[in-house]
Image 1: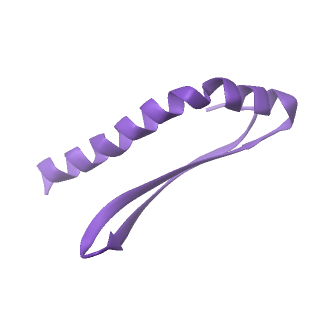
Image 2 (image 1 turned 90 degrees about the horizontal axis):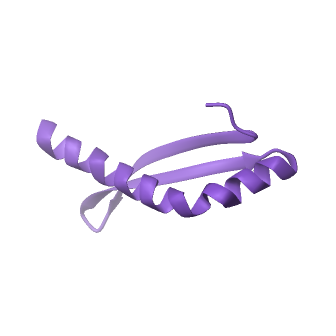
Length: 65
C-alpha cells in the first residue's frame, strides 16, 4: 500500500488474569505535511476498521480451533 509515510500493524497474544487477549496496534509514521493530513483525515475510520478486524480474527480462531 502506498502511503505518505510508514505504516505497520502488529498483533500480540497477551496473557492476563488467566485469559488470552488479542492486542492489536496500528502505527503510522507520517512523512511531511501530506502524511499528517492523510492520518488525521482517515483517523475516525480506523476505529471501525481495526475494531472489526480484531473481532474477525478472534471469531475465525474460534471456528477453526
